[in-house]
Image 1 (cartoon, rainbow, N blue to C red):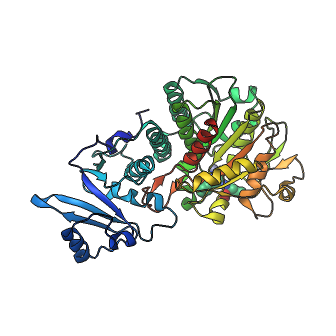
Image 2: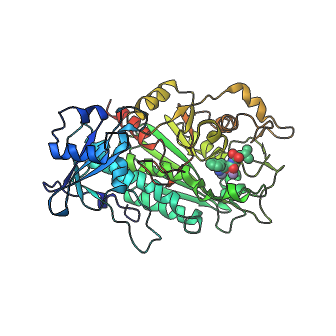
Image 3: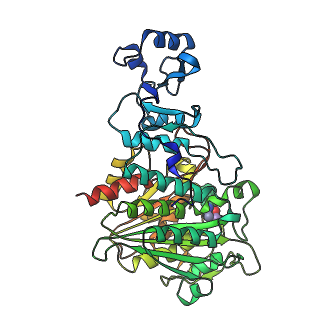
Length: 462
Ligand code: BES
Ligand code: MN
Ligand code: ZN
């Protein structure tokens, strides 16, 4: 997997000489349990360290060394608290550190450390020097970190180095690492093999559109199918985006990047599932052969689809891919996509909405998300709004005529392509950290896949 950022640089073997980090709530700092000496406490007082949330205090030792690091946890509650200390991995000087006590969640502490310390260095002459945690993650924490790094790297790579062809290369590498079978359908073959909407969206690009299809695992295990929107750049097509909206559109393959990161976790853990991973790798470009507003497209499912706006391309790609996945009646089908700006209007960049009719699966997701700081929020597949997708000349329009409920109507459009799957869940993600978080620098982000992995792992162990 190490064409991509390697988690190993963030960790070192256990060591007695590692500088201890004390994680302290305000309350704990006032108490005596922490075992800190008088001089250290005096230094904390002198420098104004009160255990406030996010406060850092470097305590000097002999010979110019750092004796220990104090990190404030504030009241110890609140969103993101499980990973607040992750910012140390980005801000501490390069050295070896260890947490002073085992808080019973070493795996999550290590994941937080790596996520916070991540740096995308592909295009830099000088590689980032990172502090190391003197405690190596176990296999499970390691595969989770690898999956997230893989996702972030894929998103961060600009479209000039991550077109549909390069996304295919990354997809094949993932398959090879886990001895999975890959099928790729590309260019005109998409017409012959009945992916009219994938072809229509991607045909104006100089890099041919393609469907990437991976299968892994034993045929008799439950079928889990992951589907990802891999629009490697979204100009908006003929309904071209204004510059400010186009600036970040290298991240429009964020859904694909996320399901690929999740697939790595699943296959690396050898979860007892028959995994299928389907990605639509296309570029929404502008040329004389681009699809147009007002066109009517055929679809794999057989529905005719009226095009209201060529910038609503993701749902077209996903429609054909979901129809494909649906054909083998999977037990679980999950799609992820940077699908709508409206999802951000509703919930902001850090809280991805998901849609499903499967109450049990929704409950398991919500249950896992909170404790591992990988949040999500259920939104409704509100059937009455299907009428907003009515078309005067085709079976369905791919966008709503009125502009309300943009994320909901996009999900409802997708639902038209799913019939046989026993359970289907759709994630409308942002795939990006727009302002720095303790556990994430600005850039591509994995969203909901640590939670999804936790749910799938949990199901496998029952
Ligand atoms: N990739 C965009 C959605 C997007 C934009 C996600 C910004 C995250 C951040 C998608 O293809 C798109 O352009 N959607 C349109 C749909 C509209 C034309 C109905 C949108 O949301 O504006
Ligand atoms: Mn678009
Ligand atoms: Zn898009």
